[in-house]
Length: 162
Image 1 (spheres, rainbow, N blue to C red):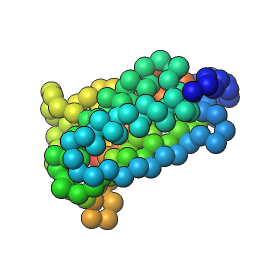
Image 2 (cartoon, helix red, strand yellow):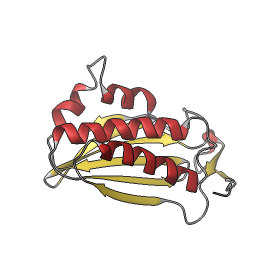
Image 3 (cartoon, rainbow, N blue to C red):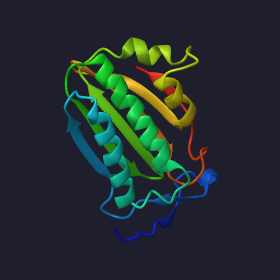
Image 4 (cartoon, rainbow, N blue to C red):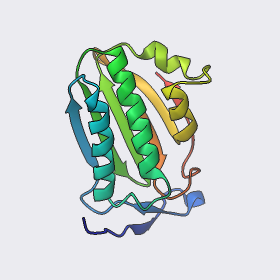
């Protein structure tokens, strides 16, 4: 795949300086997976391919971190739900947002991440710029964001589960 250079665009919040922006046309991917163990590996690989296509594999550890955290959320979806799950990736304005939606009850597991010293949500909390979850009809969406400007401090940090 040809290398796509990233344009440097001014950040709308002056204190953050400039940030790497995905090429035009980049921005959104949504894929649904069957509830089977291989789906986690497929979601991880699809994440890597999409970030390569958007030119975000050159940004410090973004692809590796996104793959790891997508793997954790997909695994959590499989453990908590016997239904299909949906992975959605979007990139804009110096932020990569990854969401995993299923129809299981993950609220307890997500809330426990704040007081837990282990588990996938601990990793999400430790490695993401911000994360959260929300009830989405009969299911739940858990998401995280990573900065694509090359700095973990790119943007604010907030966690929460509505």
